[in-house]
Each structure stands twice: as C-alpha cells, then as structure tokens.
Amino acid sequence: MTFAENHTSITRQRPSELLALIRAEPPLVQCITNFVAMNIAANVLLAAGASPAMVGDAEEAGEFARIAGALTVNIGTLSPQMMEGARAAIAGAHEAGRPWVLDPVACQATAYRRAASAELAGLKPAIIRGNASEILSLAGEESHGQGVDGRDGVEAAETGARRLAAKTGAMVAVTGEIDLVTDGKRVARIGGGSSYMPMNTAMGCSLTGLCGAYAAVAVDPFDAAVGALAHFAVAGTRAHREARGPGSFASLFVDALHAVEPGDLEREAEVAT
Ligand SMILES: Nc1ncnc2c1ncn2[C@@H]1O[C@H](COP(=O)(O)OP(=O)(O)OP(=O)(O)O)[C@@H](O)[C@H]1O
Ligand SMILES: Cc1ncsc1CCO
Ligand SMILES: [Mg+2]
Image (tube, rainbow, N blue to C red; front, side):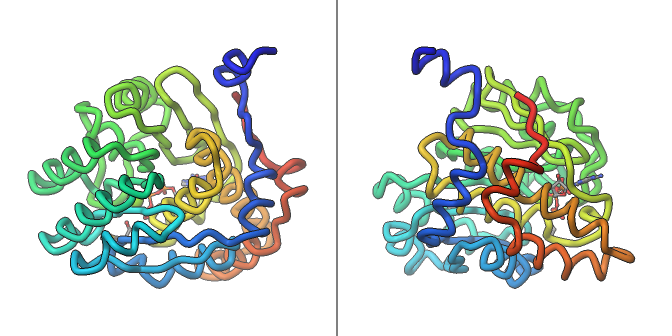
C-alpha cells in the first residue's frame, strides 16, 4: 500500500501508539477553558498522562503557546477577555507550528457565541470537537441544542461535519452515543463510553483537552482525534461497569483513564473506519 492510499483509508498512528508517546513524555497542553471545566479538565489530563496548564490571559497566552505542545480553546464561559487571550494564544501556537483545538460550547445559543465560534473556526484549528448540536450550528445548519447540552444525534451532523472540515481544514470530532471524526473525506466512528457521561459536567470540555494532548504527539490530527476519543470511550465503558450513578462514575472514570494502558486500547477500543 502506498503512503497516499494508507493515508486516506486507515488510521496511521493507532490510539495505542499515541498513548504510549503521551506516557513516555507527557505533553504540555495549554487549556483556555471555562470556569466549570477548569479543575475537572486538569485532573482528566493528569490522569490520562498529560501535563495541563490553564493559562489564558492575553498578557502571557501567546508566549506560553510557543512553549506548549498544543493549545485548546473552549468558549464555555465566553467573554471579551477570554477571546483576547485566545487570539494571542492561537497566534503563538501558529508561530511555533503547534496544533490547536477548538471547543465551540453552546455556539448555537446566542449571536455572541455564533460570532466568536465562527471567528475561531476561521483561525485554522487542527481539530474542532463538539457535541452534535454545536457542530450542526457551526456548519450553518439547524441545531436543537439546549445551552451547553447537545439535543441532536451524531448521525444528523455527519454531512455538516464533513462540510465544516472541508471549509476550515480542521478534523471535526462530533461526540455523542457513537462519536464521529472526519476530515471531510475520511470518517471514523468510535463506540463505547457511558450514558453517565452527559450527566457529568465538563466531560466534553475535558475530552477537548485530551484531544490537545493527543494532537501534541501525533503527526496527523485525524489520528489524534480518534486516539483521544478512543481513550475516553474505553475508560468510560470500564467505569460504567462499576458505577452506581453519575457521581461514582466520575471518580471511577478518572481512575480508568489512568489505568488504561496502550495495549488495552488495542484490545478494547471500538474504532470503525
Ligand atoms: N449516550 C452516550 N453514551 C456513551 N457515551 C456518551 C454518550 N453521550 C456522550 N457520550 C460521551 O461523552 C463524552 C462527552 O461528549 P458530549 O457530546 O456529551 O460532550 P459535550 O456536550 O460537549 O459535553 P460538555 O459541554 O458538558 O463538556 C464523549 O466521550 C462522548 O462519547
Ligand atoms: C455548564 C457549563 N456552562 C458553561 S460551560 C459549562 C460546562 C459544560 O460545557
Ligand atoms: Mg461541550
């Protein structure tokens, strides 16, 4: 198989390989995220094996982005100050040739969010990760999202996700019961996870952070998105087995993110390409 055929037909760096790289040398991930997710996402990244830093003020965000392995930007608690920091950080990441990941939280909800997410989507993110309602809205289609919560099925967002990927150059990761990653041509579907995940706040925000960790070590952001989603899904499936509800799930999930080894992803990840 030639490189080009291989590139378009299968995942080149498997989730297990990327997790091994993360565990060998934890990547520094700069997270500009919301006040709800700040602590949760940092713990998720630490458990998974990465090194998070919540650094977002415009005074230093650009400088920090030049030393980070990847940057993630989440508009959950959007403000003008947050946007100034994001612009500075994104410029720094581009200068350093490092990837950045966009999480357009609740972008369907208000004119301010629609404008901010459209502006950020135009700044060459490597990955855009959102629930189906957010991706539909960013793609210019009808969305039924309720605030930060998705209310659309992943499959309903596939066409929009492909178009958004083609337009922005980003890999688009749509999450829900079965996740989908596309670059506009290739599509991967990732099963697993838990019905307790949407009952825990900032799960998606934390996953966006993990996409940053995988993007920091991957050659191709498509493989990075698949790897992060597979790691999350395997940990979610494991935690669900022991959980008694959303509360106990949360701590079991963080334990499972840490316990999952590269070889476990080989055996347990449900990735269809
Ligand atoms: N019904 C479900 N079954 C299994 N996994 C799910 C389900 N719903 C969501 N997930 C998983 O939950 C994680 C977060 O995805 P989700 O789409 O809920 O993010 P989100 O809406 O952006 O979250 P938030 O904004 O609250 O951080 C993903 O790993 C996804 O696969
Ligand atoms: C609940 C909530 N509100 C703004 S951001 C956020 C975290 C989940 O997206
Ligand atoms: Mg979200």
